[in-house]
Image (cartoon, rainbow, N blue to C red; front, top):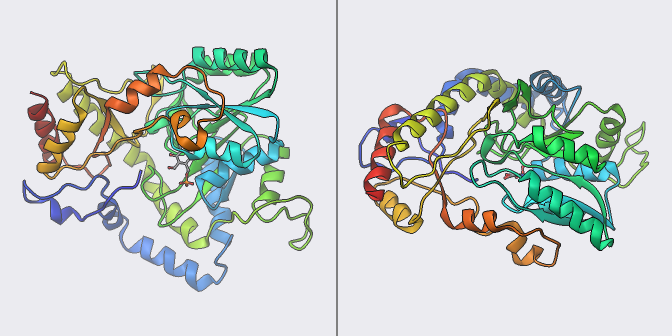
Length: 388
Ligand SMILES: Cc1ncc(COP(=O)(O)O)c(C=O)c1O
């Protein structure tokens, strides 16, 4: 989800290119306090895991309604740290959606375990509970791997259907790690992602709903024992002292400047989530008029943070070309289901017909909290015109 940026002024002309994500508009809103926060982080001289990191961790835990938030270097490491802390390794099967960003399965392989691909639902893009059940049954039947954990992803910003996934996870005695890299801040039945599952992770990559100005990530859990191990693992497996190593860890510390940025951004995050929701609803209402567009469905009781607004259309190539000609960027998340990628083709997979179909017809439109109505109307008009 790498997005270009431009300033609000650059949008004034109707034929000007529209940014996919406008991070400079957010930067303007954050103004002088953000610049001051960065300067203070620099002058403070504790550039890695400084006091701002500890403050951020407290604020993230409070925001997420979870006991422990542990900042780390990126969202990929956040997943890996938790798998490693659980002791996931060779001989273990970890169930992941086939329709997601590579990191979700990559960390399983890096831990030495086997990712097992599960299909997703065609209207929400999230893990299909029925496909999870059949994948678990397949692994048990084959008897080669031990079914150990599942990583549902809150794809494009909305929580996976944990009401249906959790009973399967409990029945099968699996561990559940929720990949909220795209969905941190979303809620399901009033509970925020981060507090759902045995543990959760997120990414602060700049284009994420809550992003910093570089790489960053965090792990979340209510489990004191797990939190203690993750804290140790993120700093080379340290013990009570920095130069005592009690386990094999990694360098996955967060820079203090990034924490300072995130503290400022967290203050406006709830308001940004509301604005994203309003923008998504405007897209929904406009596209309801067309029978050629399938809009994303959000499950009842959930609020998405709309990392992406992703529609499904039959002639995606034409739509992308027409929009490009009109100065409107689009993106395809994801053009190849993960289980079909060369690097992952040798791992077990459930049948994934829905992921296969989605990869051919999904297209994401510009979505960010600074998308003004005039610009959004230009996008809507161009989409409707192209699809006829
Ligand atoms: C679903 C998902 N998981 C994990 C990650 C990894 O996050 P990071 O890029 O911070 O390592 C991403 C980032 O794009 C993601 O979208």
